[in-house]
Amino acid sequence: MTINERFDFLGTKINITNLERTTDFLTNYNYDNVGYVAFPDSSVVAAAQRDMQLQTILNNSLLTLPDGKPSELWARVHGHKEVSTVSGFWLCKNLFKTKLTHYFLGSTDVRLKKMVEQVKTEFPNVCIAGYRSLPFHDLEYFKAGNLLTEALTEINTLKPDLIWIGISSPKQDFLMRTHAKELKHGVMLGVGGVFDYLSGDVKKSPEWVKKIGMRWLWRLVKEPGRLGAKYAMTFQILLKVIVKRLFAKQQS
Image (cartoon, rainbow, N blue to C red; front, side, top):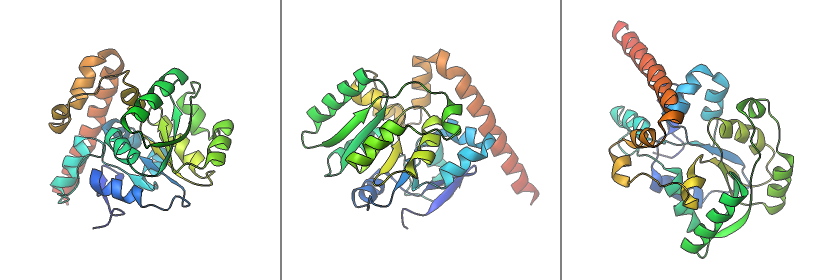
């Protein structure tokens, strides 16, 4: 098995990998070959059912990683026993231990400064080339292909290996599609809310919660107003697709 092989998770092509393999791949990657890495959770996979542009972005990445228990279980049921969740949080921490250079794009200036301070305290040898906060833009702004010219100029001047994108999905996926093509060096990684955890501003769920696949419930209890409708839509779409596929399989 190579990391380039993928399995189909309801139309989204996800790499057959785990945290160890992904860390090794990115540690030894040639960053003159630009690209982007996506971390679609179940809500993004569900959104890709309705948005073929998004599905195309996920399926044409350098890597699209199994982010969450549903994709991991789906892979294992289909014979890929070596697949396990690749958390953006733990991938960050693994790669902070390497000689790779890092750039952070997203969140607020206050949170970014706090995050950089925390990261440097935990990883004294980490090489952080720079960081930049972003003003709020809605999804349509990124779907339209607008470029963040100042940020892009700075990144191309500094030429970091890893450009961590800390905005919500699927906005970060559309951002990466447009901006990765303009990079001179490096790979973009859309890690969403990981900046919140790295800064210490948001408490991460215990590891045992993630291992039993209940991270979504932990987050829902913490933010019912923001996540309730999102999760309800996700379950509805994924259940509909799964039932449809099972019915088609029985008919064939």
